[in-house]
Length: 203
Image: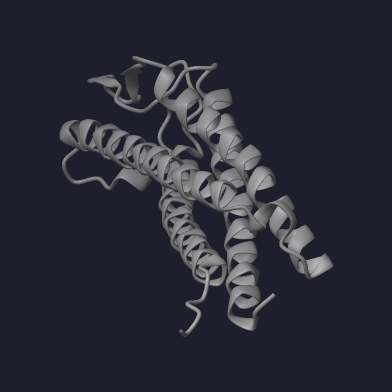
């Protein structure tokens, strides 16, 4: 196994560890957020003037569920990609990872997951902004983070800003990591095709 290929696999493994961290962070923060909102999702809500309390009407819980489901699938994908890579590094053999078909499937898988990660990041970011803009519109001299200290009608909003901020950062990092994993996988596919190409015999 070539040195460049080994370094690429090692870098890819580090990125996959990063994916595990960001996926767990997203799942945990969104799950805690749903718990504070009685199983609902505060993304893209309808805001009403509650006087001395924050009053929101929750809409579609599927936004939060998508983020949780995607990151659970991402963790499964980490195992499917990372396990053969780890075996190759330990055994110093290509085994199944030496198959061009396997490498091509991994590249396509990474591209699809990166796209889904982008959707997840956009859902959190735009939904978070919609929530904040709605509340600030009733209290224009306030910041979104200030509403963590406000009294909420029916829900516990004492940590909503921290949870959504963490989920937003984790979601965009996850997208970045999956992009880089895809690039590394494409490089490994290129290395494999170069090494498997038959050399021309001089006549």
